[in-house]
Image (tube, rainbow, N blue to C red; front, side, top):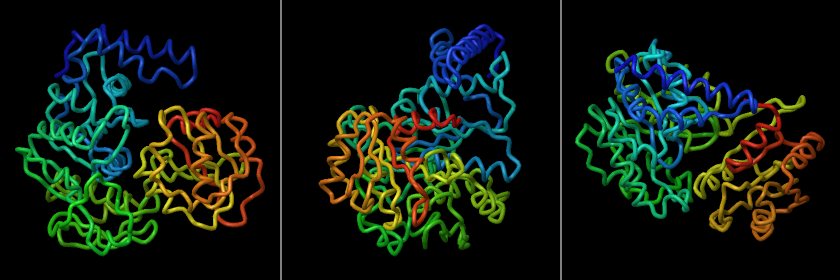
Length: 412
């Protein structure tokens, strides 16, 4: 609920945000939330509980950002006023900072409901401070081994988040670890058919894939590049995806399942598919950016599974690829299980872990033409290369390198 007692904290947080942005353009996104969480620890939970139609939480190892954006686009197409966390600010201080951007001095936000991506760990820690109308869980993968030492730990965290739903839990029915959760709320499943799963011989990256396919819920029945067929409520929908790959079709299935559950009889399949077709990719997730008069595709890889899935979708004929690994990868051997041979030729390898990822690429038969640890120098050199003979220039990067590249290019 809103309260005038939060006015001093909101004013302080906005002052901190202004000071941070004056000091460094585009900076300070998490600092205001950190301050407000310290001086008003109940602010985040109270504001999250204040939306008339409730809170929707999206969490899981991978696919959170894209699934969240898909769901927001579908709901807004149906006329809903949505508050969501921009720039994938999915940890507690980032969530609070996002709330500060829209809230009144009393902590009220003019929206029907909130649809928020939450980091698994932070979502579990915050779980005692919110109740959700719906929780959407994407998957459990081997991810961030410095934080989450095993998949069962992530499963337990997601279980704590799911337990906060008072309405429905929408979960990936092909993920065996999610399938073992036993939330008290009604469970709605989404997934793929056996034929679609067979298109991904390495699997979809889950820590454990269910041996049985779901026979109800929302099902992906066909995928070809950016086009998918998804069955919702018995009707086969033709869906245009924001980027290539079965994993994006699974994200769309999750978003459609959640939207159908939230909207009930008001769910309009035509509106939903049109919203997905018009959606721009989340930054870094198959995003194509116009830079210095040329198109460049950004491909973010965050864990071995996402690295493999995204590399497998690259066109083997690409001849202008840059690979950048940053300081967010503490132990580069984390990515050694990934077969990156499809890259073929890496024009430039860069980032603070350039030597390590270059070594992996060379061992896997990838020709590395240049190693340049200085990311700014590497990026400028890559953009100066001639236009590729096939496709467009493509940058495969980890999160740290993504942030630095976007900053260097002046992208928000």
